Image (cartoon, rainbow over all chains, first blue to last red; front, side, top):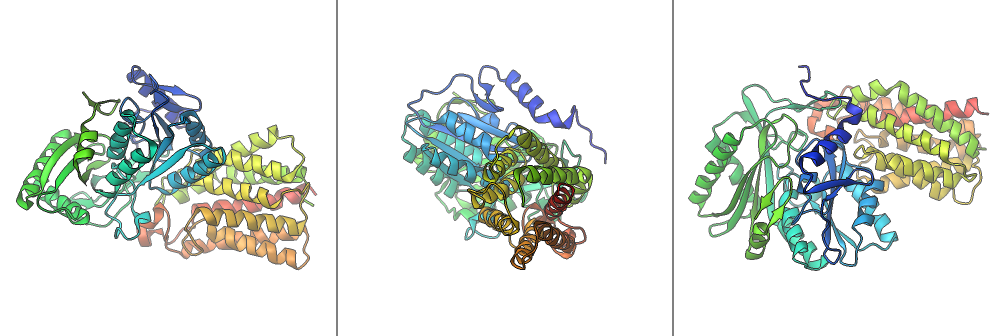
Length: 333
Length: 211
């Protein structure tokens, strides 16, 4: 199938998408240095900075989380490919302050390597930086070796709560502890109904047979098993929330934050149907749906499907989730 | 001896090899990957050529460090950190040398490999760049230990890298994104291993043309 996308020269794709992104969000974000996305109005330097890195092509992630209450700097890479260490180091130097900085890293081979090298350089330079790794995709075998678990849309709630803590002026150790507590208590499972094309190479990312869905598909269409005939919204919601609750050890009385993250061509209508199905399934288990959100936060081009995210929340995490933010991807007043 | 001047000729030849195979590398990567390995490697080679054009240093460690840093700067997932680390770690081993003899070159390659192995959990047999890099470095050391010349070292390394890369055809990917396509990964060589083979092919070509 020929690729049908509005693009120009693939070599300029990332530059052009960032330019448009900043035009569309001029009151919130700006570009500086070597394509670092920063806040239009910087946060006071006495507060912890929150920084992330990751491939492009997943808009609004990750640069869409830059703004008041969430990120200070995002380092966007090439399409589906992490930036190199020099630009991440540049971001860490830019973020450097007495209060310190928190680097949020999604568990993907390139991202982890880049972050590791940048962190080594930051240490040599004497910068005060801590790192949190998100790896919450439960399609990988077990929690025993979390290195095999990919980082999916869970980076967004981690950035949200850590960013809110930083905005409140909490010290770096507390921001890190909050990010890690969110990370430990969250899980994501993805489902795909149709594939996508890589916008610069035209390569097909994931193919899904006409009448099927694949449960457990990663950010770039990596298969995680679970191919089966397409089911209804309620049935799919039940299959997925059951798996997430089992992984989280969620039981009656627990309070969950659930997010339905559309990855491209699945409509908001379908996302709402699925969320409604999740509520029914949780009600049956006596598990509370403390907060819910649906929409496109981390996409994979025109892929069809969604990522279902669930997390066990406590009072503090809920308060941080509810705290105000003003970013291209999320506004909380 | 491999002087800075000679090393520049070697990396330029390697860049030429990668450029000539850009489409092949991307096609290999489209089986289970994003199909962007060729583009990423060519961008890395462009960065190397810019770095050597600007670098006026007369010491091998500085030159290798400049090359490694340039490759690190490529926004291409794991490719930049891995290949960048290879050259940066070679630099650490070459410290103090104005030029490398056959043994020094083999030792620098071994240090480069050790650096790469610290960055990744992939091992020989996983269908990655290591399936070409590990045998290439072992062959380089064996040739140097037998008293071979710089050219002998590079010829042995290239032949082992080529055999290693070709051998990945029969392997099922156990690492990286391609592992997700399981048995479908069998039948074509790994793109990263093929890149390693092309680099060593270029090193050999560069050293013989710049004797």
